[in-house]
Image 1 (cartoon, one colour):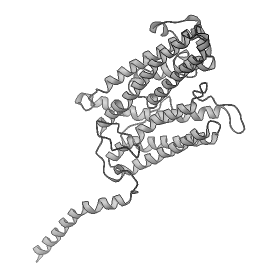
Image 2 (cartoon, one colour; image 1 turned 135 degrees about the vertical axis):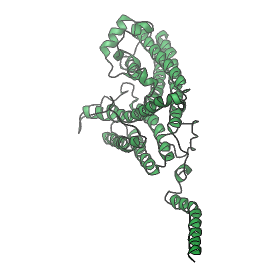
Image 3 (spheres, one colour; image 1 turned 90 degrees about the vertical axis):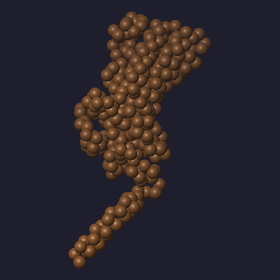
Image 4 (cartoon, rainbow, N blue to C red; image 1 turned 120 degrees about the horizontal axis):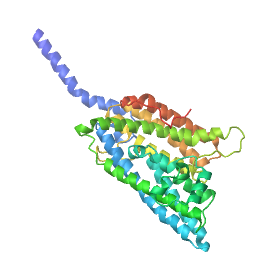
Length: 376
């Protein structure tokens, strides 16, 4: 009697175990909106550190480094054409040089949004985009007329890079045939030299076998660097580019225009949009996108979390990112005069950074360190 009872209990237990996989997913799926993409409703593959680094270097940073190098190379002849333009064609040549600068700045901002690997190792941020520009140093450099890479090594960074070119193309536009224009051409060549070096460095980094036994320590350091630079990029956009200039300009009825980046060229909004686009792309997957194939596409942090079974945290990350998306879109629509929308975007970026530091980084077993991007 006891044996038969035990057999019946065992049979029932096995039947329930077999039934569970068919029932539990249906219950779990019922909690996700039907409109959600398949990778939010269903289990996704496990993405490890190797997959994340392959995506970051091979499918995110490398294409952006190539875009930056292409645009920086095109900037050089555009500025040369300005310097050689007849007086009658000077205005058109200046507009062409400005357009080339804008394209270069946008591709740089996309790449530098989360500065990893070569950008950090080469200190490219300082070489290409040092702020604030020092007009007195630019004037001094114009007087010395440095030519070539070696001569440019002796020029201080506040007189070089994209901000210096912005000053020479907008604040005090260089005239064709002038010493200022010759210097602007040298500055453009210096930016192009750095862009070429970055493109090569990222091409080399993209071939790294992050899964090799002798690369394990390097891969751990690389993913930690990436997460820290991602957080730093969020904070740099929030503080250095938005909140700090706004606070420095005063509050209330103050009519002073904040010293936002790219103010001279009138491209502040475009710069913010490019930087946020770069940050967002490594954070969440577009709802319309297919599930990334491990090792063959960028795996945003949201998908890394989902691959680890951390869907609730991934959902929180997505919601925080969507909030920044919405507030940033409002800034683009209402413009720089609407301080309230800029302040709201800064608050939403603060919330995203807090989530990144307090929950996302620990989930990825990464410690967040202090960086120059941190505000007061």
